[in-house]
Length: 151
Image (cartoon, rainbow, N blue to C red; front, side):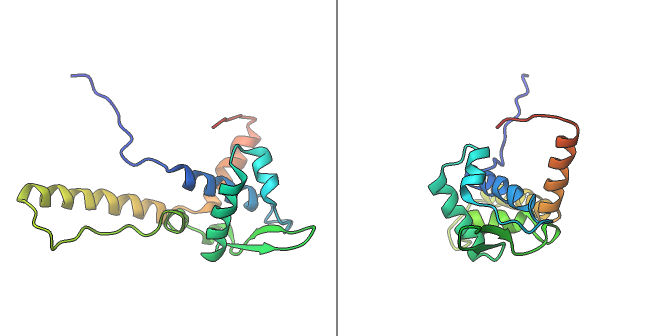
């Protein structure tokens, strides 16, 4: 039997863009320099209008602060260690909805859903136990090693 690997839980582009933007903004946390949308889109192939919407969502969710003016841009509202990956995903994608138990389901469907809920819980737990700070650390490690990665 030919074994194929499938990505059951895929990273949505919107979440990936949010993470990339947050990494760029977090890289300026030490010197408190606001990061502009154009600075991010210059380094990464993210549509500017799309990024504006993503950053607005992150700002409304309390992860970013925006600063107006010539030297304005975005800064983190919290330290990177205090921002879990689950918080980011939930802000960008919205909270996961549970299935409606009122609908009639078969025994097989119930068993499948129970197992899938375990997978969902495990993935949420994993995301909740990892922070933006860890992504920053990994990025810095790769930069120190001189590795170049392209998306």
